[in-house]
Length: 352
Image (cartoon, rainbow, N blue to C red; front, side, top):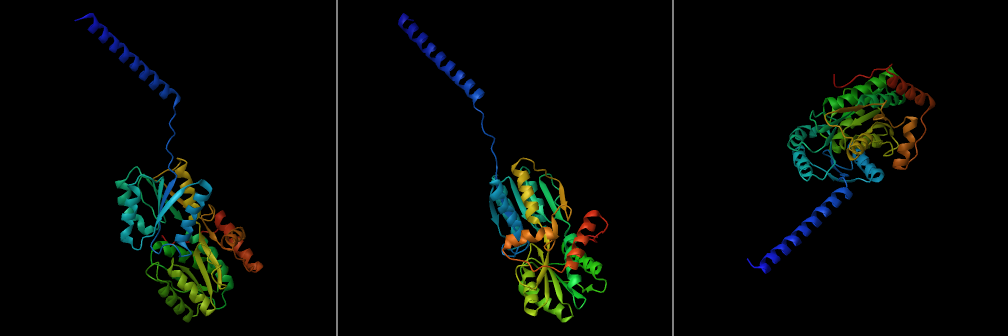
């Protein structure tokens, strides 16, 4: 080997060593000083129940919770409006497989079967379901004591009825809707022992206001002078019938009192509050799956639109002004609310 060849190899080795030192120093500096930001998911998926937006009830109030989270917490959200139960699993899967969502919220008890499949297929995705329990570690189940808010609505109905007969229209004959009925009936009879609620009638679905209207008219024919509708979009037909026949109507889930003068009160199920609180937990890293969250009057997850502490909220939300209730009705209503919260009134449940 010539001296020149030895010298060139020595030079190349020195250059490589220098490059290596630079790489090592740069890597050490990068590791020490660079702190990568923790990825934060602030995107939410909402899968509404069949019937979709515009029901002025269950879906609309759930959507309002997501909207509030967007405004107050800076979250973004996508939503889907399935037209049939068979579409739930597809929408759930399409959302979950993207990996983009901090939480996917499934609105409605009838999403449970699909969610049992989807949540197991995507164990790292967080889900919440409204009105049903899905016992999986990545699912939070949000349930409501609808019977309590319905009791208060029954109190108002019992105080106003002139015929001492009242009606109830449900979407489907299931424990969830029976819970509204038995609470309502108990409230009517507590406030007015002379009054009764006729046997409930059921539409058979959530998106048929025409059938809801027909059933309501039949109840008026039996002497009822008011009807409580817990039927999603089908219930809008019941409330329209009350308006057209000059009878009392009682709304559900969201305040529906602004729709017609004949709508006296609504049993409020604050799905918006529950959805908002669950979204907040998810984006703050506090989400706990596998838990059942249940709320009633004490937790302010259910209520009655005519409670003094609710009226101003609904007036502002829907830009209308209530006609004041008679003082004796307000007293009866607030007494019932306090007694339920204190546990001195136990409201019957449709689940037993």
